[in-house]
Image (tube, one colour):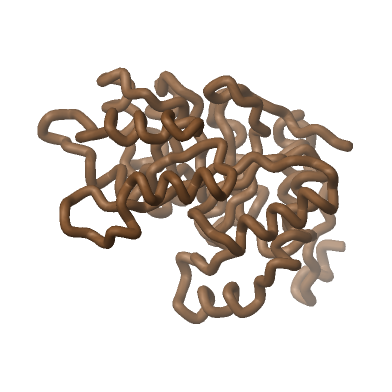
Amino acid sequence: MNEFPRTMVGGVSLPRLIAGSNWFLGYSHTSLAKDKFIKDFQTRERIASVLSVFLENGVDAVMGPPSQLLEDAVRDAEDRTGRAMIRILTPIFNIAPGGDPAAEPEVMFDLCKRLNATFCMPHQAVTDALLDRMSGTIRDLDRYTALIRERGMVPGLSTHMPETPVYADRQNADVETYIQIYNAAGFLMQVEADWVQRVIAKAQKPVMTIKPLAAGRLLPIVGLGFVWNTIRPQDMVTIGTTTPDEAREVIDLSIDLLCHQMPDLQLQKTRSKRSLE
């Protein structure tokens, strides 16, 4: 079985490439119609087929929200390949009184544990709401990380704000990693790419970058070429794929880029490119 390059995060060995889940669960960042297409197309069996490709190539980690569909597909892929997959779950939960009792932090963390999470990283909707630019802190964070630790999971933070790693490091937060948007298009990033690159480079913990292809707005060679060449050896790239072929393509391309080899992928062909052959 192939083995993708790895890094250590909170005492856990992780592949530097992580399977994303937006293209499994219907978060296209494109349109409602595209979201519906993903949800209509993806089944437990199809998701398991994609995850099996990742596992067969040593990419044994997946990131996503707490989802029974995703967990069922992960289990199927594990059965097919005989290899375990590390779950990185990003729950959303109440941070103010009076919310849905089913969304209380303890309830959501218990759910993540039942879904076999190794890493539990409060989602951007939580993290960025807690970030206080006036005081330069992330409020109430110790409470949530303690609850995560109590359940035997590794805490981290998912964010869209570049301040999050800076503030968390400054307050010595009990987290082991950060999820940070990073792509060459600046898609969903709040400051320029060079600023985010500097934040990642200075982070005291490994960073899991997300949306390297800007939700399909960048070609794989452009998006992955940029990210792999501007992050540190301890950092990771998370990428969503729709089909097994897409998974194979991004894995092969990533290996070539990490090895500083000229990619030799089969190119798409259209009538307008006949003169180039």
